[in-house]
Length: 191
Image (cartoon, rainbow, N blue to C red; front, side):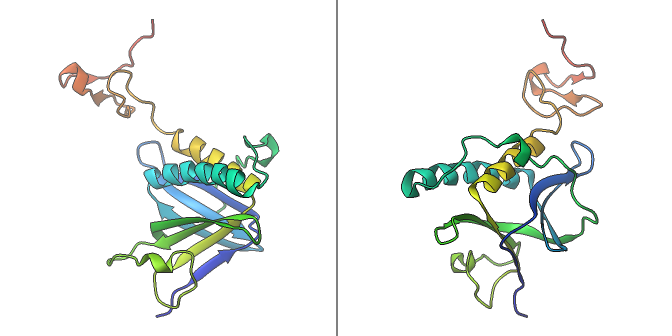
């Protein structure tokens, strides 16, 4: 069966978001353009890495190509709205690709479906007939910076870390290794 590549050359929206309560959240990336809406599932760590790598790519593009790249996200560009509904999983992301299209001066994000076998790097950011399904999104430097900013906010909006061990605190407390296994049910008082 031929692979499906969902291409968004001028997305109206490309955002990271979650469904569920902290500690039980499912992370999504969602792209929308001209009535099309595609949502893919990925891990929290993948969202964090993608945001970090987009920031690094933007710095490199500004340095090497002289592209105009914003240092920070203009407030009016930051999308704070919830994910669009219905949130229907197209696929779970396995491999991610990131690049710069000098012709259109756009950051290209490609998300490939997880597969049983190892993905050949040649299919990333390519239109080959064989390979996993993909979502490919083209973002201006401003849109890419805004995506990375929101992704950082989404990743950091989860459970607060324990002040002793830095592990996430559950609402019912957690067994802190720094307390020799005693369950802490109330947060530490700040001095």
